[in-house]
Image (tube, rainbow, N blue to C red; front, side):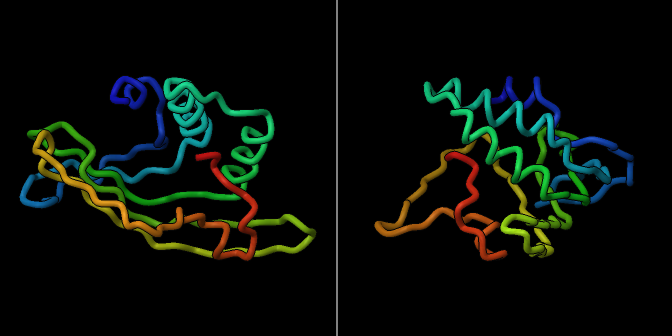
Length: 145
């Protein structure tokens, strides 16, 4: 999916905030906001490549989800690897469905490192996909995954 990441901008309003080490790699730090249109395009293209295009209902649900959230924070790009190696910030969600306003703020931070090295993933026998709208009491809204 690398070319999709190159094609679709997921972050906007990037501002240089200096440098910081991420897992031992000196990295450029940028303040950023979520580019909702870019993220929507990326998610739709990713689904299409997988052979499962999004239905109009799923697109509507995705629009609702994106319209109810904002992300502000930081993205880090490794100086040597030139790869996005950390995202941190605040994800604010405001759900106005059912004529009730439900809102929440999630602090997120995740780092990615050791690019190109083998990875082993084990999915538990019983698992449940995380849906941030469940925190607001609206589990019916999904990303169509």
